[in-house]
Each structure stands twice: as C-alpha cells, then as structure tokens.
Length: 50
Image 1 (cartoon, rainbow, N blue to C red):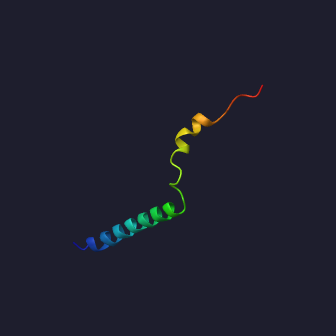
Image 2 (cartoon, one colour):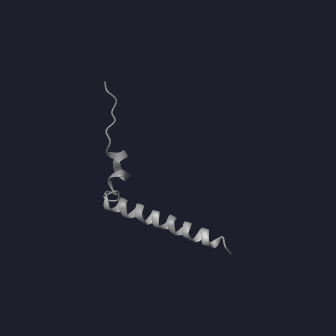
Image 3 (spheres, rainbow, N blue to C red):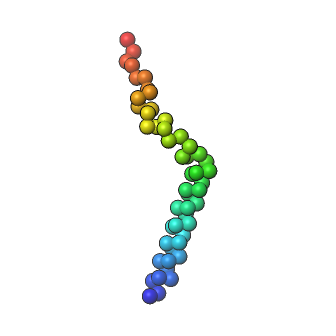
C-alpha cells in the first residue's frame, strides 16, 4: 500500500508534463496547418535537370 504514495505523485507529474507540452505546442502553432503536409508530396516539382 505504501507504493501508492510513490506511484500516484509520479503519475500526476507525468500527466502534468504531458498537458504542459500540449498547451505549449498548441500556443506555438504546431497544429495550425494540417492540410499542407498531406498534399506536399503531390505539389513538389522534382523534375530531373536536362
């Protein structure tokens, strides 16, 4: 039963770190453009030089 005093705070710290990372990523614009990466391969022009 004493292990719960160690595991529960560690689990809460991991969850808190994940929430902080998500909020930071959302505020810094990591999730703004979701369309361009999906069509980038179609739009790239990689014609070989003659």
